[in-house]
Image (cartoon, rainbow, N blue to C red; front, side, top):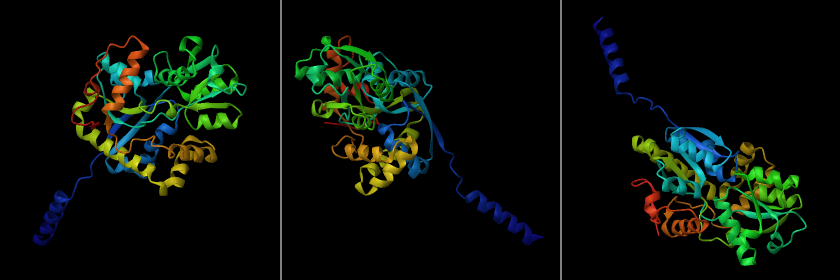
Length: 321
């Protein structure tokens, strides 16, 4: 009996000393539109288990526009958003929304202006209908960066709006508009369908970043370690994507998630690796953010701070020159 009692006591001691499995922390993550190239690192992190290794479970919430995602973020309905077009969080923060930027993601805009086949130059878009994301959205800044050097005044075109690049591609395909601004793979699909590529935004707006990750500051204040774990996993995902030896697996991951033609996905991957579109470390460049804030100011009606530090989360975000 004494021996049995000893064995029971020993078993109990072993159980007490064994490490307790850590429960995953759940994050509500807002995304704009359906799965797209801007979500590539996120998909990689899920597939390769980087978030799971950090004990972070992601619940992906899709909305049709950046504005819709930012409204949910400000209200606390979601905790974080990745691949958010930076104009919307800047506007929201300037108006007092409980939001902060924590990471720069795409530092060079990968957009192209695609037009009906009969248009061969940007000059020909004068007087035509162009679809962009919003009246004060980031694609308006990009389009006008391209039009003005070609002597096309913004007031000389008719703007219509759709927040997601997929919706803009559908409008172009239907013939409802003359031109629009598209991300790959939609820009690639447009060219394969016979539409004209009138130029890349990256050749006109090298100083303007495109997307970043933002958080609800109330949530972040209560969960700083969870946020750090999430960002650590996300950084690993970006680094994996940027490693050329992972090309084929990256293509396979996106093709599976998006249900797009693998050949189109492969062309998209090669395009995104042709220039430094993705910021590898997540560091937020003061110079690029200052340029973007200045460009937003030129749209009119913006009265926010010009201090980049005002828009980032202290203690989490990494600011660089």
